[in-house]
Length: 383
Image (tube, rainbow, N blue to C red; front, side, top):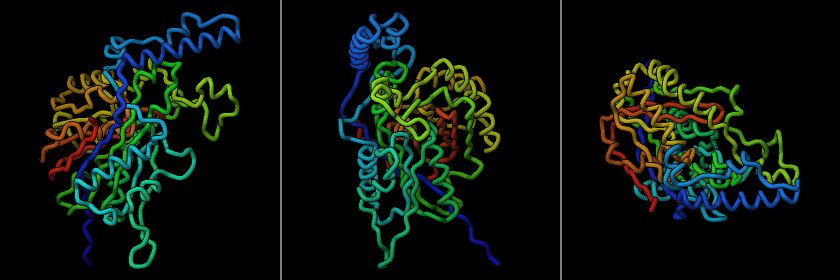
């Protein structure tokens, strides 16, 4: 009895799209000042005095402060009425066009995002199927299309890449469209500089395609994931979900449906973990030494923190290239890693070994290692 060889998977192409509206650090600082004035006036009406010194500090930032402690220079914000699905569709259309791939050739959509276009339904994967014109019928019967919306905070895209590999490697799909898109500007609380200074919007699309086993870019052992729900409160949206729905006007006015973060805890817990034990465990599973990586891309939550992680890796023997978006787009969450790849096409040469590192809320981490074995089609619409 002859057993069939399981297929491998390659990345055929990556496309990125960012909205045209640029918000500099200076503009963000001005918006926070406006929010401070409005909040101060509100508190004077409600309690007879304005903001305390500690409360006012949460609204205070500057271009110099952001560059020093975060590393970002600007970010992109979507226009009103533009949702995550619009960012994704722009990237996906460009990708399919550049690859000459017809919508009928796509047999699955994995949509990584933490900012769904609609809170409960419809899923963005279904919206993208309609926007791209992926057929509903084949041979007069309903056409099978694998699909899922995937949300794992800032680890979403690498987690979705792992699921894409599982589907392709098992033979359940041949051409999967992997989306990483977020309209993070919709989650900003303008009373809190911790996220107001970092978040941005972008959409990306990657075509994951089946190849013969000997051309596989990946392997099951080259994916690694981790969860720590005991530290879930470090990065959290207090209200707006099914456990604590928004109930009052006060909840909305106080931005309890927006992201909140304990930045000090992130630095003390997540950064040392990713810089040390996490990458050690992932590389041990893959059987790769750290010095074998030619290039790495980290989720771009904060360039200064990422520099601390990479410094730890270099002390352990890493001497490869670090690809990033250069601080020009902010923290785009599910889009950050493929965006960085799309902005650095020259680095994605055949034969290079890479590491992709997503980490963030949950707490969570998802890592992937691979080898580029084919040329990629790269496109970035970010002007």
